[in-house]
Length: 175
Image (cartoon, rainbow, N blue to C red; front, side):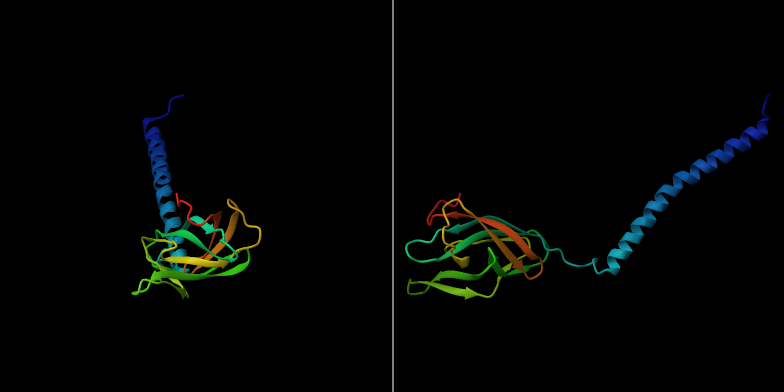
């Protein structure tokens, strides 16, 4: 049975039209889904909200020396976001810790100042050290070199960040 040329052309035209419509439908649906998602994100307040990315690394806490139980912990805090943030509180093993800054007075004496918070500028890093900002805490009985202590650092914008610090003897090489 032979199909007339006129009928064959209609079938081919209808098929091409159907294939073209299906091919055009995929990007239109994808754009609609993307637009719907962006609209929901914007409506929820996500658009224009600054990003804060805080990473806490290289935690160490000094083993107390002599009869004292007060010691210090140090972290490297990096803000790779585009908004400044502030470290506002620190806890360790369920206990409160403080923030402080050590500095030299004009007369050459060492001094310590308690801090309510510490700024972590966008795109910058806060490297805590015995010669600057640190976390002041009371050591738990039985800490030994190499033990790990769990800390939670709370930031004004980022919220809570959990970190571990290794117990090291004072004066140990930071590397």
